[in-house]
Length: 358
Image 1 (cartoon, rainbow, N blue to C red):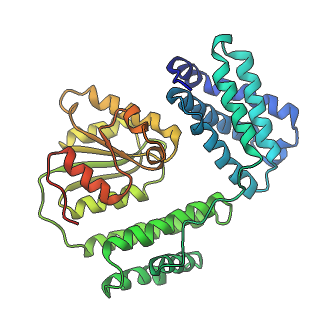
Image 2: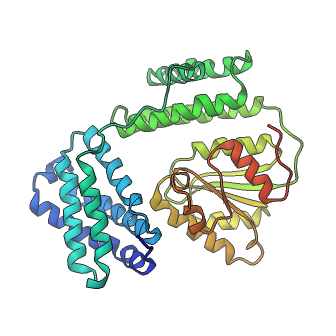
Image 3: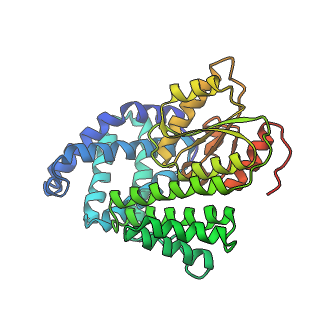
């Protein structure tokens, strides 16, 4: 399917209004939906369908229907885990299709309607569960599983000791503690939340503990001599997930970079100003959801508009990019990295440093 930038712009500009119309159709067709999504069913569905339209815009912008279909199927897993009938999701897509049929110019309807139909066709056969991110067949996997269990029991001291003691006793390397224990543990927590097996509070508790342990691991790590380079690292506005970015930032710190770690949900204006204020040599941006790629592109555009920092290279990562081979180029980035080791290697190449010794 060839890309259609003009149609994508129409969907972006009209997403909120189309979502309202589709929500009203859904409520009329399935009044019981209001009880399942109380106390604010219209607001909940407006937000859901606005996100769907942004996903549809991305799929059309890049000519890749799978970008929309995959998000719909991911939504099916979340709905099934929370006891929401599949019919609610199906009817919401039908309502969206009807609104687009009525509202879009006739010459622009075919592609979005085709993509929505493809997602409807894929719904029935798609799985209702997400696979686990942990394997207890390896020592690192078993340690990660024990770590998650200790935290779900509310014992962060025991969980921390498991990881830090293993590093101190050389049973686990420092890099493996990050990449083979803490990162898979966080991925498993994300899966469990999506499957409605844990609450937001539990997920936040585990994430806060993992970040606390990362601080202690970083303090234990031997650091390379300063390489004279500064990197600004941040998750873009709207993205509250930054554990993967934190790991990459710590690895860059160990490699000798001055790391200005800004965390998550960073407005583009402040992000770009930080690049200028700290005289950064590199900007590292992370995004989790496909819909957040537009915020990455916005930040990069704003960076390029500032003459004093316009030539600063941009490295991107996160699930929004690493599940899509070309999205980083479309956002205007200079390179992509999908794990912490790769982030160090690519970052060094972008600023003219030799390959790292890991």
